[in-house]
Image (tube, rainbow, N blue to C red; front, side, top):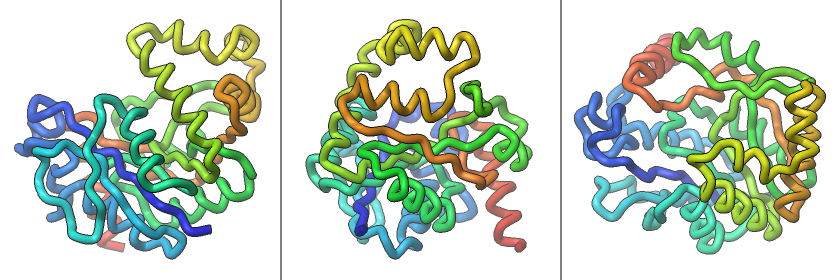
Length: 251
């Protein structure tokens, strides 16, 4: 399977705490180990043979991108940007974010292999809490607690089939309620919500519930990579990522 890739690089402008700390107009271009953050993501994608074209969804006033990627205009929300990218590139489509600079080709290969094995239309990567904490990030992480463990998202999604667009449309509906978390949760359905509250909902169960509501087959793929769930949302995250990258370079 030959994948297309989309990097979400939409910006909240220079007032974004990461952009402000790095002294740049767009967070995606914060310097990390001598290269813009987004270039680390592009390089990881380029290191995977199964990935073909790479596109970046970014504002028109953002700095120039490397010449080996397509540039798409960012929409007014992540889900809308993904839908536009899906329509432009088609499936199978891999989606990640520009603030995911610890991505590696090994992580991506494991995720794509898991997505293929799942035989579904929409896939998201998650990392178990005990794996995430091996990276030693002092920052607070958000975990969802299921019957088979606590997991954190990895900003890594796959839409292997045309039906994956149904999941993106469902994502758009969730975005409309992003300021009302209880309404977002309710859209998954009362049964799964009650099962989660009772500690009886598994990762397979939530994926099935989301797929049912979205009108497609969905799955979660766990990644056993400590660096897989650490995006850059705060200035302190820059320091953590720089330390991790320096450790990699030192071998």
